[in-house]
Amino acid sequence: MKTGISQAINNKTILELRYHGYSRIVEPHAYGIDKDRNEILRCFQTSGGSESGEKSGWKLLKVSEIFSLHLTGQTFTSRPGYRRNDKAMTTIFSQL
Image (cartoon, rainbow, N blue to C red; front, side):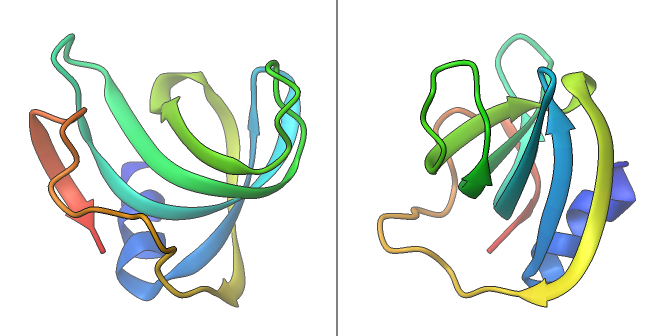
């Protein structure tokens, strides 16, 4: 999964994934480790479901809770409001 996420970020490829029982379409922007040593993904969700009911917007997902991941082959451009060197991450593997 780690390779797929980094590849998606490096190639700006949209991901389709399942997280907390919902199918989601996301634009991955940064991937790394948080202060609790969890692998996390900062992404912008464009469609799908979520526990909060927000179907689109910035999300911070725990990679260990992603059930399946698929590179769609569609590309995206960096979203307004994205900042490199995400403060939620103590180590960054890949980022736009």
